[in-house]
Image 1 (tube, rainbow over the protein chains, first blue to last red):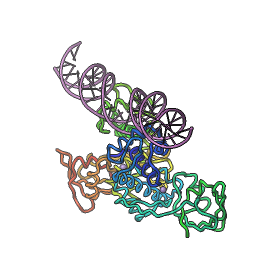
Image 2 (image 1 turned 180 degrees about the vertical axis):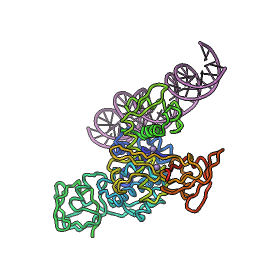
Image 3 (image 1 turned 30 degrees about the vertical axis):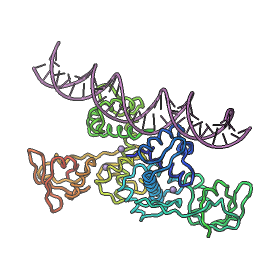
Image 4 (image 1 turned 180 degrees about the horizontal axis):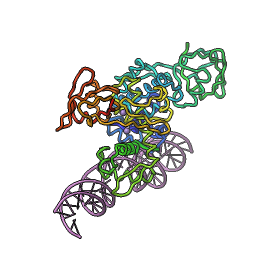
Length: 217
Length: 217
DNA sequence: AAATGATTTTAGGTTCAACTAAATATCAAT
DNA sequence: ATTGATATTTAGTTGAACCTAAAATCATTT
Ligand SMILES: [Mn+2]
Ligand SMILES: [Mn+2]
Ligand SMILES: [Mn+2]
Ligand SMILES: [Mn+2]
């Protein structure tokens, strides 16, 4: 059986790989909040278990087995997030931390029961796709709001769920999945934006604009 | 913070105390499925944390602090069991094992959300009372079905949730909370019974009769 | 090609929660 | 009061998962 730590390591590596970044010791250490040496320790063990490929000083890469595990964890995480919103009236800025723990204690039966109760949802409250039971994950292409220019009209597809405060702030601006946003102004020096949602205009920092992912409409 | 192990130890001790049994090293070892020596190790630590009173060779007793912790865990356990039945269509023989894990990863907010969604239930699917947030646990008096005699008419108040197979079997006989049971026959040698539920008569072993708790009606 | 700075690994601990085997205490029965 | 059975504790290990400090490797610049 896999431990909570193991699952968190695998998930962290998967996330780096998805973002196109190399899963280096230091990247993992800062992601997981542990010392570099601890990462080296653990990736050796994970390598022995066949979950990743490891060559000293070269970072790691998940094996198929590792990717499969990552998708399972991600599936449970996102199902829980959706469930908390739909059945327990959670707001989207509160679900991530709960799901972070629940994902590790979820049997196949419970996973299935939640999936069924939700009517087999394809996405989570932040617009992330939910992997299927057999490990398929269709990934839509979307761009960060920060990459858009004045005049662009876009639709919100996803908001990063890592930072609760940003989610809360985004919601207060009227940013929700499928919201329509018009970029009014872009500051060239710091990348901050003025955007229009509904009838209101708002100022949006670069950091927030980096957390909102959209498609042109 | 308390670990999963700590919580399971505290709960096991509490259960023994409630049953009126002394929480000895060997009783705990067999309850928790670990070696006797491991119990001695752990109760020393729990004693240092002020959760129980320990005197060498004399068994242990929870402090108020220990009881408070036990009631919190029991509350989360039973809320989860109820929630799985009500919201996820679980049968009463499947909920215990899931709750056994979920109870340890439940924040105060999640506990509250579940309680609210269920409308502040007072009992779990097996008829066990749910401790209140402030640690009150009203305990009804009930007797094991096994202690009754031919001719007694009783009402089911509680069924032990420890053994999934017994719960499943009981359900198949029509035993549910508040079921009315008439004791038809009692075998003096092995304590097994013949009982009538609705229009049907069933044979019930001593072991099963020990797991069903009732009151005279 | 050598030096320097950053990254990664190794070496050697710590804590937690288990284990086995051996020693000791308790308790009931002579 | 001694003995023997049973229960409990001690002593010494193990494996996870972390840590710090020191050594090794890599990457980049001179
Ligand atoms: Mn997690
Ligand atoms: Mn999410
Ligand atoms: Mn448990
Ligand atoms: Mn129960």
